[in-house]
Image 1 (tube, helix red, strand yellow):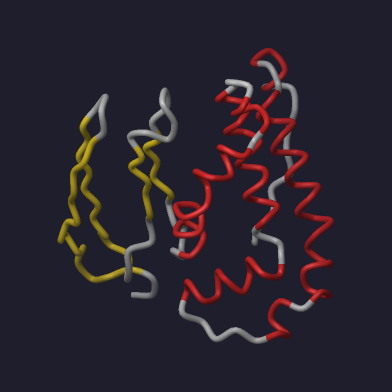
Image 2 (tube, one colour):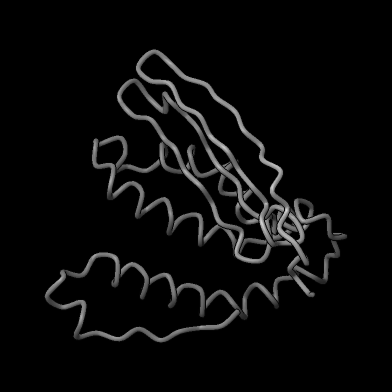
Length: 164
């Protein structure tokens, strides 16, 4: 059946935790996919005023979801906008920063390790990354433009779709 099981895996992974200000609980279920592709963060005290709860959908592979769960909290905290107290802008900037990181050779190697694939130098050689780099920068610019446009202009602009 390809990337899907003949029956869903309904086993659940659950947990709970909390901090000084709040308590939380979570559950995750694999479902119809061959393996669990999602990851999450439960950080009740990202800083003294901010909590972070997030789910990353693997969309056909868990390695990027795992990478985001591992690194996105610190990428968010490293943004100038975060330090200035502008959380929405910090999230936007952090998502763009993570997207850019995903094109870097060392990150591609880490993703291959997370996916359990052998790491070959020719798999993430400079030619391959350089070829995709211009397209990725253009796509990031379009995503940023779409994310920051007003509602009144949103319906008047179309964005090209790229299949990976």
